[in-house]
Amino acid sequence: MRNVVLALSLVMAAAVANAETKIGFVDMQKAIQTTAAGKKAKTELEGDFNKKKKELEKKEADLKKMGEDLEKKKSVLSEEALGKKQAEFQEEMLKYRDIVGKSQVEIQKKERELTAPILDKMKKVIAKLAKEKGYSMILENSQMVLFATPESDLTDEVVKAFEKEK
Image (cartoon, rainbow, N blue to C red; front, top):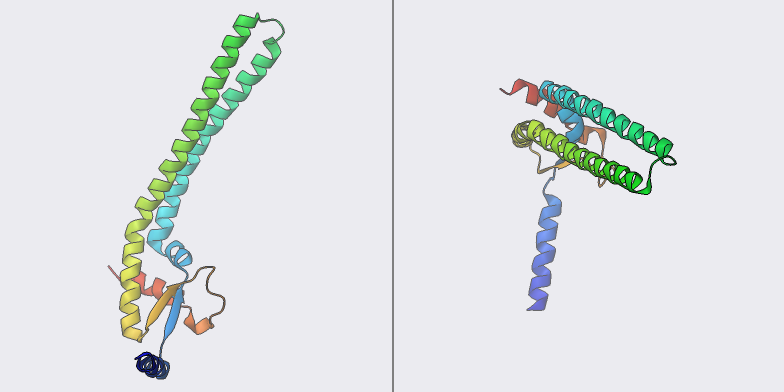
């Protein structure tokens, strides 16, 4: 029985080796950023990011000033007043950290919202292109691809097809 399974495996491996396997890859990040929709999403995201960044920089400057004031008045304040001021400063620091964390989550969420429809359309375009061109498999170019011929890179072709799709 074992010999039959081994023989069957060898026959299947030989059949797969004889069949022409056409594999390509797409740099998804580059493809998304190259499309008009991707550029628009990037611009919108950068606008939101810069707005949040300005708000955070203002809060950071306020905290820095508060810390400097506390340090200057440290020697003249009573122990009770100093403790109160330090507690206020710590509370403001915690609020700032919370705002920073929430801002990062909001930006990531916005990025997903903006890129999800682009990614969905991109996957459909890739599937259509694969069928038309006879590809068995199209991979996403990532750190895992160690070598590929330039002809295997379908990124530009996918971008052109994406832009033609409505």
